[in-house]
Image (tube, rainbow, N blue to C red; front, side, top):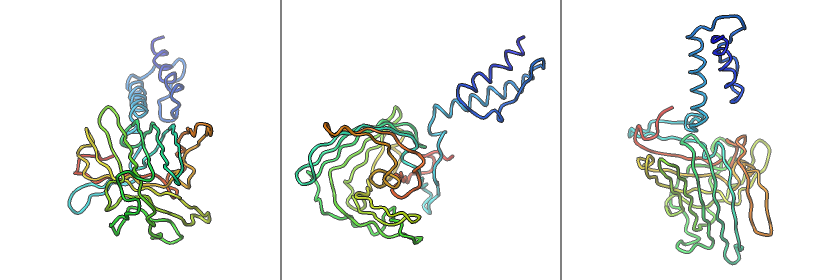
Length: 268
């Protein structure tokens, strides 16, 4: 009787988390359950549950390379899962303000986030262009290199992401790289135009304090402007929605690019 209970237990857990049966040892009625095989089932399920609890294990980096100075450059999708609520008022002819909060998961972990966007900027020259000749992204135009981003404007724009281990803060304060750009082109025969393409620079605290440089970049609305499924309440200028992971990799996808000493961002 006890062997039958052991044989059934893994499949009860399996049904609740929907993992593939092929990765579990199977047992038949009337057969004795080998202890090692039962333990393997429990170990597999334990790993699976841990992956559910830990987004940093569930999701992988796009790339992680060692630079000539020994530091490590890590590229990952900003969003793997996410949802948000935002509000706004005003127009760009007068003063436009937008703010909101979100929850997201990526290969670094799970974060709560807030943003605040003001135009015209209070403390920045709205026409001051970045001085850097190389930016982290180009607009696809049918060539391997793509065409350069065209500087558009500056705003007061800040984003904060936090969890119980640390926090990341991004802004447009770094005039050598950050800014809002125009990006238009063609991708697989489909034309696109990002009214705003963002490049923000950031810094970290807590477990992320070892990061030496970090950039967040992507186009308004994410991959092909369609990464977020949104609904609107026009009477209050309010909207809410969730992230569509299938758009990752398309033009406008939001990325994080991190440079840090070896061991700061654990290898996968």
